Image (cartoon, rainbow over all chains, first blue to last red; front, side, top):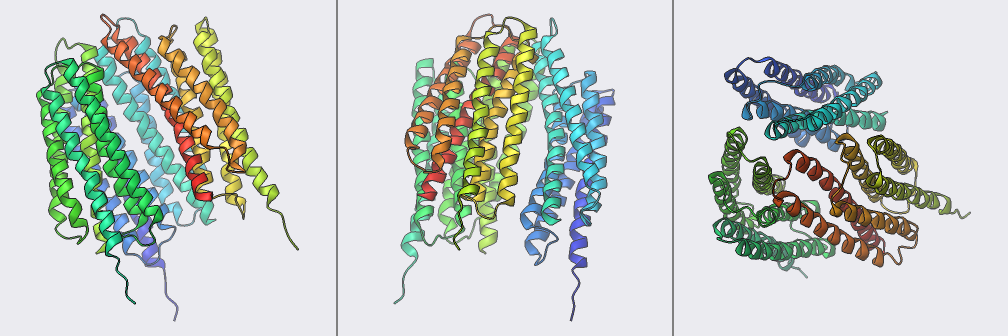
Length: 208
Length: 208
Length: 208
């Protein structure tokens, strides 16, 4: 007379892992666009990034559809929805950053931008590693502590870069505007990763 | 012993149509401000737009009041609230755009801005036409497909314009800042129309 | 056999008052940073403001913790959460404004900025005075009417300043960007105070 919840639950955790995998791809494209030699190359990478974003979007919708059609979910529907869209925000900001590079034809980058993208790559890895642990809700502590630490570092890199950008003598105002928009978008991506960690934390607190 | 729900339901649909009508007025004022010959004229139009916005605001509050005082609502209270404020966002962004034109004394506009406003006008018409169909929840498909198509076009126009604006040789940085803010606001208005369509779609899916 | 709700309720009202007190400290630091003579001084004030923000953050978390662990709350959990984070937004924007002054090494301020900070100081006082009145839900009318009036004044000061900033002949574009960001942040702080008043109003309407 018993019945197993396993199939349904597995489904959700797999979908979250799948969704998070796009973050690693996104961070890889960002790293690639910073190292690209030509505008043609940068546009090709931005296009690939758009495809990653589209695929991530489908993964999010798959989760939403599953929530709406499942009778039993492994944790609160609202929380599943919230986590799915928090993951989606990360890739959206990374995609927007790549788009700006191509759109504004930015060919060289302050060191701080490279730093920002390195931090995002690490955040993406940590997030992907954390997803399977949602099942047991164990060992998640180190994940969100490390994400918070990285976000603080990203924030410091961001602010130092802004100060340098705006206080440099004889800076080209149009270039300042372009770079400001790019580094704001990368900072928003780091914030989005932190929001994912906060979501995971609040789910773990509720469920434990 | 029976009782009819019709009066109450009619009320909500009428209020949504009324609320949406402000969008057409707003789009008309935006079209007018682009064609205005003098700063005095632009300021007069921005002032009229403020009145449209105030009146739209009252329409939104009327809906909220009705939700709070009605025992039975045609669909979820939360969805009614969400749709009302999504409609309100559209007019808020259009109003903000008109304000920027007057405030920054922008006297001539890139072609892309004209394109953006044309798209907003069409979106406003489609949205107003869709509101009465909320009653039957039928024939709404074409509405949100067309809004999505228009939003994609708006997005392309927006991005092409940004690239032109920022990559032009010898551009005046202050003018670039002013125009950037204006076209961002118009793009936000197009996004807001898309959000209305998404809201309508999710209500239709839930209720059907 | 009776039991008293008083201790728990007192707790919440005290926590809100405590949380709001940070707003007065924040406004005082903003006033101080505008009058500072050196960059060293400005950086010291921005650092003190960060400490006010951290302390405000802890006050917010204290409220959230109390909501989560209390069986009975004086009004809706969701509303308590909403009010706590609305108060937090005020200090966040004031903190961000002080940070920008230090980061961008802004040494002199348009008169409008001084006006904005004066309005924020008055808003902070009114908000702190209103918190104890949450208990009786009485005499709150004058509070939100006055906050609305101040927000309108702040909005006018903001817009006049933007027009002057962007329409001045021969303005330094980089300085315009820095000041734009600062006055946007101060305007966001004024909006955040208005949101607090709206939250209080909607709670009062619900509970009365």
